[in-house]
Length: 111
Image (cartoon, rainbow, N blue to C red):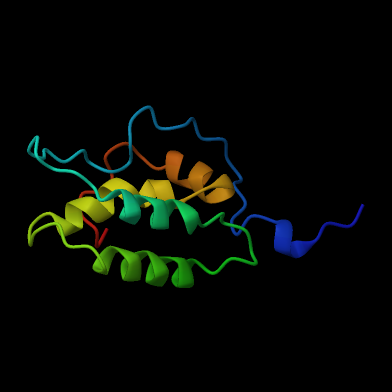
């Protein structure tokens, strides 16, 4: 059996890690009036990164940030929005990788 290298995950896990029960991203307290624009959310969900070799993670991040920069949520909330919706931009192997990160290990967009 010959496997297509483009259909292989970017990373191979040599260990089995239990999924994180809660998100790797620290949950942010936001006020009740906070709403993410549905067009913004749709654009993010339509541009998913799957984590396979044929996909470029740098291109995905660039595209993700470009989409995020099109929508403004206030000076202090733009980073919070990126953190909240980034997991929605992942699928397949990339989503599995994300779900295996330590709980609340990501506290800012830079991390």
